[in-house]
Length: 103
Image 1 (cartoon, rainbow, N blue to C red):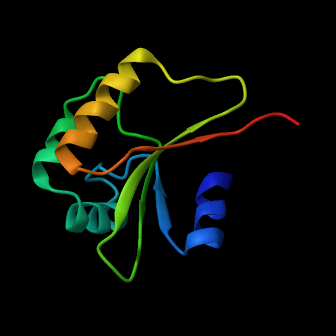
Image 2: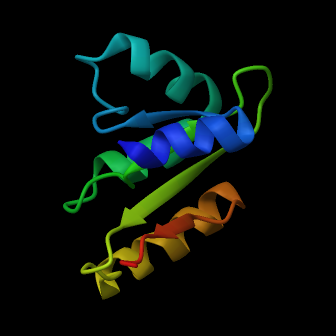
């Protein structure tokens, strides 16, 4: 995903794309589980809509965030906003949104 590359190039943060909370992907699970509290992981696992698009983290530190990516034809759904509010309460971290626009 181009967003993960852009985040890495601009911040040095690594972004895990898709299924970062899936036990079948142990290389993704380790940094995710090391940083994200269990109650947050449980909340995300119970969602029908799934996880935010990216889990991004500083490989040399403890900082991390969730990021949703939208194309120029896509928009944030009401259910996503509700989920984000709860995630922000649980994590005390803002969910980031990257919206691409057509030139």
